[in-house]
Image (cartoon, rainbow over the protein chains, first blue to last red):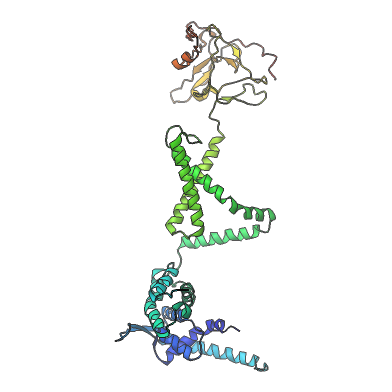
Length: 108
Length: 348
């Protein structure tokens, strides 16, 4: 099964989870998702998701000046983002439980 | 890809692929694109296309992840109506495709496109030339031919190039306007072509349909609503009845179109429509500008038709040394045209 298709459905949740850990800028979020194991995640998908969540009012953003590199736009969760993460996490847990039950008899 | 794209070139390509988005969305999506690309390029040392895919794919991914347009930018009413009409039309088109004749026509129609390009150019050229004197459906001289061919060439070039490249909005509007104008001009021409511009010879008592006479040397200079026959020696003839080769009476255009009316003698038979010259009187108008009803004319006052020949016509008719018979107005009032039995040739 193509995991990129699965990723599309849960990318919002993954981005919210990464940002709940600590604030991050675009490429930083991409890297942390990859390090967590989502190696197929696309840069553009993450950037688009961040912009969409920000537009929807789930994220705060602020610009951090850096000495050596460019100024970076950091994103973090606000209250809307945290409650969105909670409800999405619940949905995901119950969904994954159902899938695990279904797959219990399937040899791995 | 031979030479790897620079971050700048890659970013430009992505921006171009997203050019159709509203400015606000585009700005939000692309604000740190350059920094991101620079970081990726510095980190991996790989060509950007290898690491991120083509700029178009990157743009498509960005667009998909970002979702639709911002909520406060709902499409305008015009755009919504346009979208609905397009959807309806394509729905009807889809259903109609089940009918084999429609399917064949739909498959064939694109092949007619070049023909439309030529017709479109021709119609617009002739439409422009019609603003000058001597309008017609053909260019008159070399300059007009050159102009017409140039417009046709431009129309075909436009048709070929818009097929491949996406035109900007104003270009599409211009093209739409040009097409609409061309359709309008073609329709005008079709409607106009049904109305003959040459002499219409109508049948008087309507025996066997209309007789049409093509432009001839005699009729070429304008509309004919009366005919003045002369004998060889120059004497005006009267009550000359004209028939065509099939025995149908030859009649001229309706004189009432030229504010003339057939004089009807009192107590006599009405004049025969194909006995020339026709006894015509000008139509008089009453106080309100309406044509007065046709009263009969006493026989003594019956009008005498008098032609007013142009000098050129007289000269042309005189090939010999002897002066040509110059039609002269007959001063004395003459008797009304006597209706005589129609010749045996006439089919009734």
